[in-house]
Length: 172
Image (cartoon, rainbow, N blue to C red; front, top):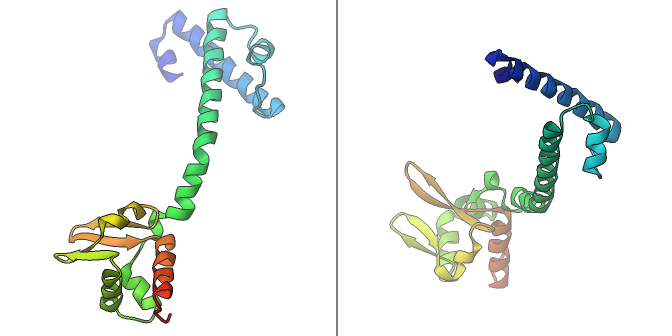
């Protein structure tokens, strides 16, 4: 709207006035109709009948695009929720953290996981064997810092390790 005003032409001011009218009509419509537009043509007729047909067509296109985006958002929301709750990147923990929770040293847990064929060490970094690489990113991920790469686990990965230890007779 500021761009339209700054141009200073009659056409720019006309468009500015349409936008202001559109804004307040939309605000009123949202309050009255609860943001539910079931029939776009009726909605436009009710709130934008004074606008030129060209502007009404633009508004109709915007409303339809908004509806499409809302449908797309509703399809993606469960994936986002899953990512936030299950994968929870902010909640990644190291194998050392898990070992301490289980009352053992990090070296011991790393060795157990290595003996079980889950991880291997290359240089100073532990990696998942390729047969377990499918666990990334649901159970584990690699965190890169200025010092190198670290294998970290999600809460689901932590539970996987605990179950693996229990299944193989380790007392926890």
